[in-house]
Length: 135
Image (cartoon, rainbow, N blue to C red):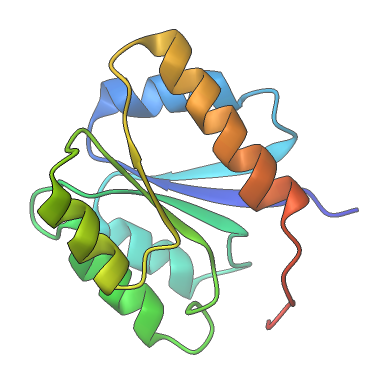
């Protein structure tokens, strides 16, 4: 069986390090993009990810703009996109769902909770969830 691929999009190196530590035993290949443009470039080349973990608040190109591009592409529109944000603001949550987010998760501040949340997310979306292969 082919290893599942996860694209992690986050501009915060500390959050990326925490996420990579939490995901190291998930039997998945994790690719990191530090910006929206990097994420879109990663989606244009090679095998598409099975799951995208996308930070909402990023400079240059925020998560909503990246999400719009993902949902606008015929090859990428069906990929589950879980928004990760430190914001629990209702407007941010509503905006993400309006733009096509699959799920919205507020990043816990505690490493243990963050790791547990990422494991739960990836176990469901990258391992248990079954979706058609449209590639």
